[in-house]
Amino acid sequence: MTGAKPMQCGGCGGADFRLFTADAEVRIAVECQQCKDVSYIQPSPAKLAIEWDDKSDGRLTVF
Image (cartoon, rainbow, N blue to C red; front, side, top):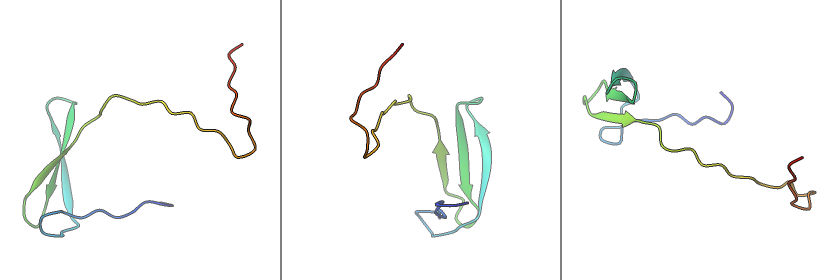
């Protein structure tokens, strides 16, 4: 995967994980297979950002 960086456990440095569903589709539990530490991945409210190209004058119009 281009630009992706590998992740590791913040506790022991392990790189092997198991994923579990948690809280009925709200969170994903990530368990380190070395030290059994658990972290959670959960969605947060989306944020919309608009950036302009270097050659753009920064105008956005809705028709």
